[in-house]
Image 1 (tube, each protein chain N blue to C red):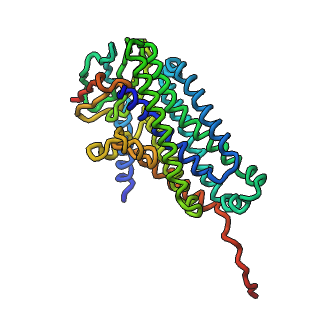
Image 2: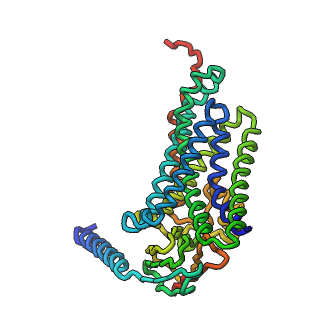
Image 3: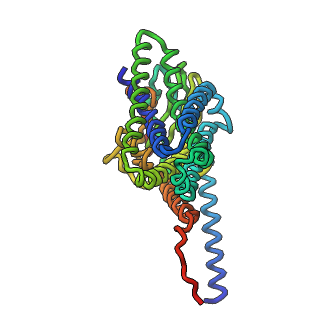
Length: 277
Length: 117
């Protein structure tokens, strides 16, 4: 039972953290509940479909369908997170200023919500399909231990939801005026980490077969399959044996998001200027 | 710098580039092919050998009815193998060493090593 619990919990850590962060990011946006619930539901349904067609997906595209699919959905998540951060840099103030004006806030917020709902959906889809496959394996192996393993899996899933709650309540404790700055940084690191994971799948598929050397090995210090390593893996993209290309793409993603955020940021409140002759 | 020296440099550079191209394409042609099966949540054989510095392809046949997830941190692979399915995993050329892999769904019983020497 403990084995099943650990496997399922490990798989849902990433999705759990991402849902918690997205809930905190959207704390002030009305109607976020239905968007995020929609993202989770879509992700779960998608995960079941992906798990059901795991073999077909694996054989697709000359045997690298699974890798390219994972890389593709990770790339979508990266783009959506980056877009969200850039969009919030431009409209965040506006959104906060009109917080009382629900109608305006909804129309402003919903575009960003759609992007984040996709991020949630993708996170749940990716990890959920592995959980679904694992549970399917339990179901068909059956036997007397089946029910016990299933109970373990259910507890693992519940712990994942607990992690979501912990992340969310931890983040919303941050004073509102700082929350935006904190979540912007979180989202940037999250995007960079997912970009590095995307690269790993492209390298596994043989699409990006260069700079594959291991950049460093810190598995002796903190294994990324340990609980702490897993959490850091999601939050800042920590990897104990990344390839050189992963490190480069990680840094590039951060640089690009920061640069674009600076570029689109509206000019600070126009100061009254004295006309000079 | 004389024209002759420049010509020599350009020729040498071209020769190196062609040489490098030949080596890399040659390496791909001599891919080391390994075969594994999974039965009763165990890899057979549990240890396979491969030459250093050559790309490796590992064919994994899952004889169990349950899905497995072939995973290896050091080989940098993470691939789901459905029950009864066969997949081929491509691994980059590696320096000598012992590289552990396992079934993520049954890590306690299912592990193996690629020994590169």
